Image: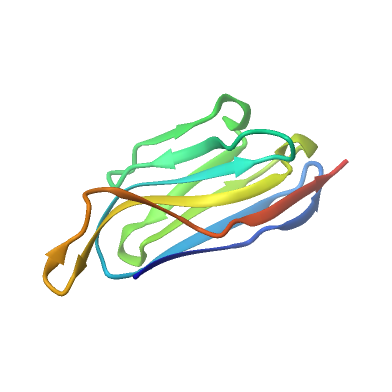
Length: 125
């Protein structure tokens, strides 16, 4: 009933930029936090950046000053602008949204976490 679809990944040289997008669609009543996570080969998934519906943001230390998260609440879309990319940013990036559904007049679990399928980002040195 809910889909998160990411786009914008790819191969880029170190120092380059990419912009990821994620659109949430379906029977959505409200979205609280949206965020981006990543999983690098051989590592655990980590939070990259998050943004509340009010626009408050947080970032993992390794991307501060290089990545910018933003969202368009009217379009249920979150973005991740990635600049000055480094080889260590190589990972599969996943979109996350904590949201509440409204289906046939009934609300779903409050702020349930939904995930996208992931998009590969590869940074070459």
